[in-house]
Image (tube, rainbow, N blue to C red; front, side):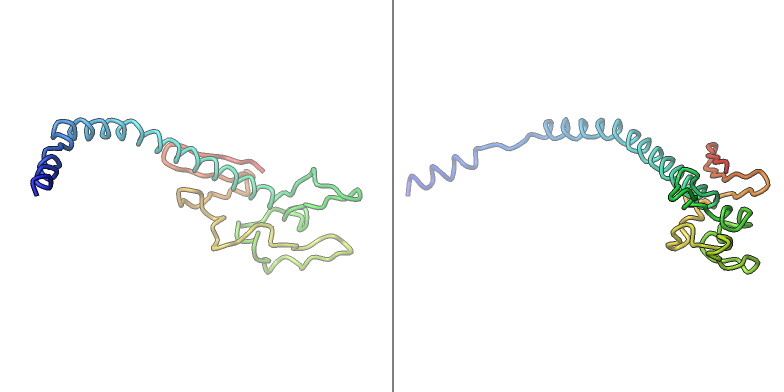
Length: 155
């Protein structure tokens, strides 16, 4: 019985962390968080810009096609403009045939041959920040504006 009391007492005398040690750890974690959070915010902003640029280039390709895609001496990725003869009046025309445009004719290679872009939940209409693209057919450009920044893709 005496040995049992001794081992119980020795376990009670074993210490854990002191309050000062815990405070030092909490302060250190706070400093690390204060340094890391702005870095992660910058990474998020950069990834949004990259994703928006990538999507805008995909929209440009859907509108004008890819002049480098040739098979058998013919363009195989002509885009909306190459198939129809003019740029779409709105971005929605890339996924649904406008009423004023004829159906694609294989003999003449003219007419709406879409959809030209993936239309999942109409996500192609907005940038990574959720803002609608500005589609300027007169100046042949697509614009994304977020705060003071803007991304412009000419087509």
